[in-house]
Image (cartoon, rainbow, N blue to C red; front, side, top):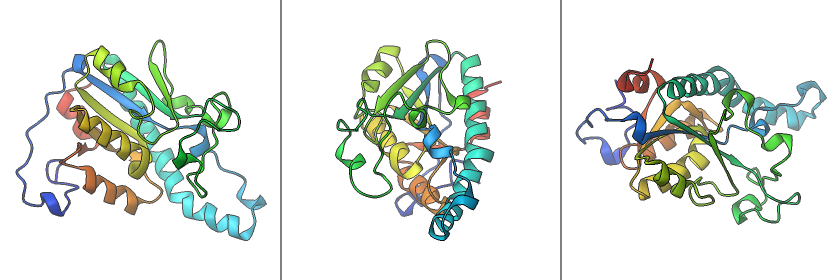
Length: 231
């Protein structure tokens, strides 16, 4: 099974297979979304309470996926895109104020999504492996969508971009919101499934099926590299 038939929801079970995509390097950008220190840093499990250890263990598959798939595959794509002169851009969640008073409502709600990530602090920084080099652009947002909360839309248009390759986290949150916004702006969007992660694989797989075929095309790293002839 290839990207043309995988990750299909009920709506697209009988839809014809899409053609290969014509992703011209000058019209294509790679966007890495929210792979930041706060999401990959882990405490010492032995120092946690029993309840905290249970939560720690629930998140272990996510951290394994990040370490073994998402970060290395995304780094490989970054290296190949840079070599091919494809624009590489980054998005990160960070507030302008230390107390987070400029955050959007979704980041002030109680619960896991309550994010206080001041822009100059270590937790809000992009991980070293997936950080910009040279004059590569990073946009800072307090929204899920990298378009809604930044000038990324204008940047992409000014760069002459028509196709956006998306990698990052979380598949069912900021990646999905960004993909939908890009699609609404008539960008052609590709989501690289093994360069993304959600809190669980089930959430990841479910969201890929939801957004595939209507908001984006979902494929893996090898399929994208082969289709674009990246070397």
